[in-house]
Image (cartoon, rainbow over all chains, first blue to last red; front, side, top):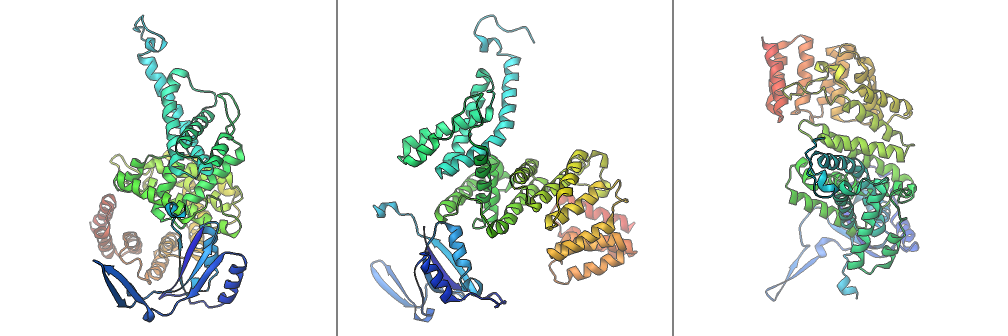
Amino acid sequence: MKYMMFVCTDTEPDTDKAGLPDIDTWVTENDTRGRRLDGHELAPTTAATTVRVRNGELLVSDGPFTETKEVIVGYDLLECADLDEAIEVARTHPMAREGRIELRPFADLPHRSA
Amino acid sequence: MTGTSPACGGAAQATAGGEAVDVVAQVAGVVGVVGKDAFGRIVATLIRVTDDWTLAEDCAQEALTLALERWPTEGIPANPGGWLMTVARNRAIDILRRVSTERRKLQELASLALTTDTGPAPVRKEDVVDDRLRLIFTCCHPALRLDARVALTLRTICGIPTADIARAFLVSESTMTRRLTRAKTKIADAGIPYRVPTGPALAERLPGVLAVLYLLFTRGYDAGGEPAFADEAIRLVRLLEQLMPDQPEISALLALFLFQHSRRDARRDADGNLLTLDKQDRSRWDHAAIAEGLDVLARTRQDGPYALQARIAACHATAASADATDWPMIATWYDELARIQPSPVIELNRAVAHGYAHGPAAGLRLLAAARAGGTLDDYPPALAAEADLTARHGDRDRAAALFRRAATLSHLEPERRALLDRAAQLST
């Protein structure tokens, strides 16, 4: 299954920084095992632009779609057997402790895959 | 034997009076006993093979319905569980044939060992064991909301009708149906595996499974709860203990349930009011259950949180009278419990235990420490405990005021009444 892993900040990170995993090791490990297909850090939300079309009119505005304290700072595209494997990958990411990680499976869209 | 059967008609007609009713009742009894266990087994096995939760449940349900129809006239088969599994399997094959061309599932289903009425068990024992464990761990996956985990466990493993579960959760049947559907959809969409975790993951997940069973038990044991849930929780923890005999916390939880459940007939007076331990008629406790609990606990070598709670419950269960309760031992177990699983409520219970073991002053000292965090400020049991300790310490007026304040904060009518009674006794 494909999982989009959103890497997010959190206002209450883990205070215990001892033994924090190294991001480069994490990337190498999961790339080598074929569990990470793609991923990147994102520019801050100050660089975000929101696009909408309403009644045929294009509306472009500055900023992220919602103003929150926690923001998505990066993503990784995973290929895992199931949720438990994806959780294992996520738990070893440094941001699991400094922020939070949201796992979203790709939707099953059979009408498109044909 | 009434002797009033009409002379005409076949065998079924001839017994259309009392005997037929007896047979139906007898069959319903057998279906009830066998079905309860078979339902979970069948659902677990069919889910493994088909990946389809609804299909598995529907087929198990249909097999039970068919048994109720057929057994009164055809007789109860020698191997009722095998009969039910065969019917459910055949029904699943029919449905899948109609709606799908997935060959692998069909082949696997067809290869589930066939059984005759007198034949061997329908599938290998290891498979049944694994399937049920898989189902329990999947229903209790931490990626599901806790209430969904409990509801899904009740529906899928215990076979409790959705309407009954809805009643226990105080929601409408359609709401509960949606909640269950959402949970099953999440399992499929999120890729929650149908598997017992291995290695360190097992140790991480087992407490979650036991927490669901504990919640299930509590739902059956609470004032106004559904007693059947407590029975189901005991049945499931027994099953888990059989399946994973090397996990001491499972045995400990079983022992804890047995001690608490042993008091079920003695916990209420004639008017249905809850009775505290010291007011219960101990001869009405289930002493066989207590003996089994002690037996189970004796085998438990390692003390986790459930084992410590079970040891405390054992002290209460084996005391000949409330006065003979071994409070110093209970206080020691609470010290240990507070050390490995600190929480304000455990600190509160610890204070009460020390209050009985070493005098009210010692209890009040520990209670003040437990309340320092502020979590217990508006918690009626904390105020009631403080009131009780204060009364025993000699300050009756202050104790009565505390009981009254606890009563105003309580949402449970029987508890409110009991607290006001205590206040009134102190004021006279």
